[in-house]
Length: 100
Image 1: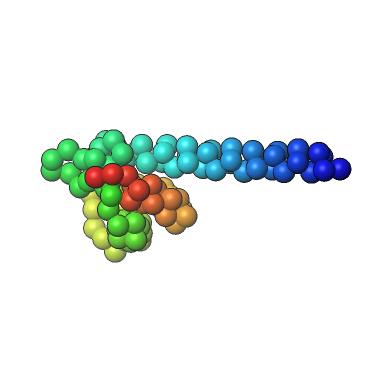
Image 2: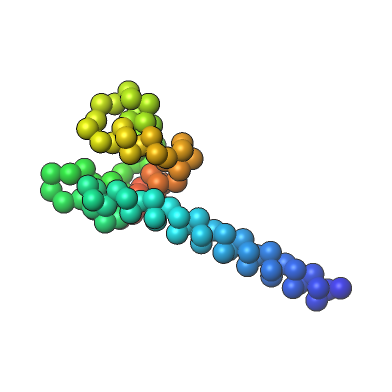
């Protein structure tokens, strides 16, 4: 019985770890769409806004403002509408965690 419990626990932990890694990979895919303007991992070229290391709440609010139309833009309002609020939270957390 003890061995069965150990195997079951290992399977559950392994599955949880794989799910967490899949979530991280998905966020990286979403964030990659930002690279054209904001640079790889949010490290923008001069003239564009860098996202790496910025405050997550501030980034999320900007994205939500683009999404709702409160913040005018040429393209960001269209891009932001393609993400759910939860996806925006994940993407902005990813950029906030990147080193400047």
